[in-house]
Image (cartoon, rainbow, N blue to C red; front, side, top):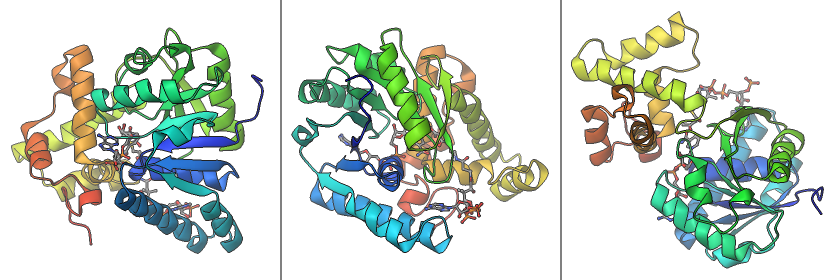
Length: 288
Ligand code: CAA
Ligand code: NAD
């Protein structure tokens, strides 16, 4: 039972990350059921995945046949009750502890298999906070994918003080052997490894713009041309989503109370204005 191969995955949320996670699972020959709140959001999520699969074909990463087969493996639902037979569920909804905790509490009652893996793709919320929303925190783990999921090869695996070793092994084997990702392990504290390093850098770049110290173009150009980053910090903040970057900063600030993690007023104002980046059509830059 414990070594049973994971073949039925559920993904909760079909935004930037949920869509990417569902796509890589479908491309890895896994049956994928995706939850979205409404039919409209589900249709938008499916369209997002199909666009990315098309890009995979046009860049020669997958064949037309693989695209068709991956699309065929994806189903959508607006009823979490349909997740009862899932062996692994990856939650990828908005970076909000209350919303995620409610989902974990519900999921815990729906998925009865004691060896099922209940994972969160949270960027920063300590996984134990989600584990305690369930009656079986040994099933709860962090599986932190990176954006864009079909392109970036890493998963941060976050185990809590309560995560079962079998659950951790199953999650790691799925990420590595089925999805072909590289896995690193992080302890359970806000921001894990990647965002504890990345987010202060993004916030520093925003503070530079805010203070008029340098223009956004020059900041990004400096890091692309001078430090060989694939994109500058402001373009990267747009890619991640300003709302998500702010939520991550808030969560790390709550944990550590370090000024380093406090969201600058410009970030707060842009989120309030709906300028949340590429997904909304505008952030530090504009998108067609
Ligand atoms: N499916 C499969 N492969 C794809 C693809 C898709 N949908 N889209 C692109 N690719 C492949 C391309 O074929 C190309 O592969 P090769 O290098 O082998 O040719 C590669 O991905 C790059 O694609 P492009 O050349 O078309 O695009 P680009 O050069 O403009 O790169 C980018 C775009 C991948 C986003 C790159 O700029 C990048 O890596 N940026 C940094 C992203 C980053 O730092 N992400 C982490 C964010 S933080 C996070 O995720 C954690 C968090 O909690 C916030
Ligand atoms: P997104 O804004 O693209 O999508 C948010 C998703 O949450 C949508 O599917 C939306 O329908 C759903 N949602 C919103 N409110 C909800 C509610 N009340 N109940 C149920 N579902 C709700 O966000 P995203 O970038 O896909 O981020 C999702 C998760 O992935 C977050 O925890 C984020 O921190 C994490 N993450 C993001 C990135 C990134 O670069 N964007 C990278 C790694 C991890």
